[in-house]
Image (cartoon, rainbow, N blue to C red):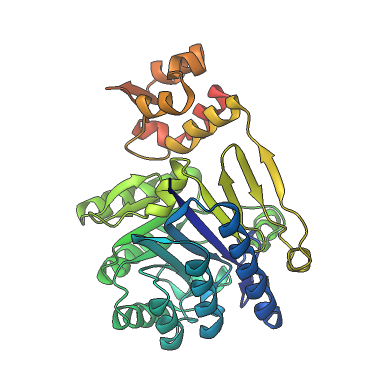
Length: 372
């Protein structure tokens, strides 16, 4: 019997490192692209042999900057995925791209290989902010990339937006929302900036050279985004994600629902059964075939993970689905740990669905700490 799974391909190459980025991505390593692509193809075929019952329902190509790949290599990866696994007729195939790197030839290779959804790293509409955080594009490049996407027939696209950037104001956020909406994307993601260790951003913030908006201002930015997007027909289906009807990202939704997926590429993660794994992040280690880091989840870990991920969705987590997976309900799994967040209005358990309230979304980490 076939089993629907997702597939994640990690392309670890970037033109330059952004100030906030701690993802496994590497600049100046373009000469390794053919070897990495070859290793990824071999990895896909290996997984195809191991998991012969798999039908791919969603595939997500992330990075890094996948749109830096030469079109021939992109075509090779897409062809290898389809040779290794059968794909569902309606499979969602997403690819991340960065403005300024999108070309007609790359898009042609994508469309030929079955890509039908794009996530574009636009981030904001102000060129001064884009320069400051190390983006290689201007907002004019965003408009040009969207025009190329539409010309290639790729009308299902997401625009990434960042909130809480150094020097970003409420007016900047309003201007960005207006500029994004003028491009009429099917989906918009709004991410709050996180200061990660060992990044240029952390160094600049710690030294006082860059000042971030305070917590209240950042929350106001998020509320402005939520309200504006709702007024323009974008439904919030996850803490950071908004989509027009019928255009939510199925791959990411499936990850939040703990559906299984296979990861291929340097630093790629995967999840099958009770095991999560992560491939070596360094390109030389990956090319040498170093083994992945594997985590075997206990029953207790899996229950907590299901709630941690499921609560990100605005529809919440149905108790029936939780019971079907683990044989127990929420009370049996978490007991009195549920009492405080239910009592103070951070959580609701209504109609058999556990979900965060509006306030709970702002303080989700506090809820998870108590459930631990």
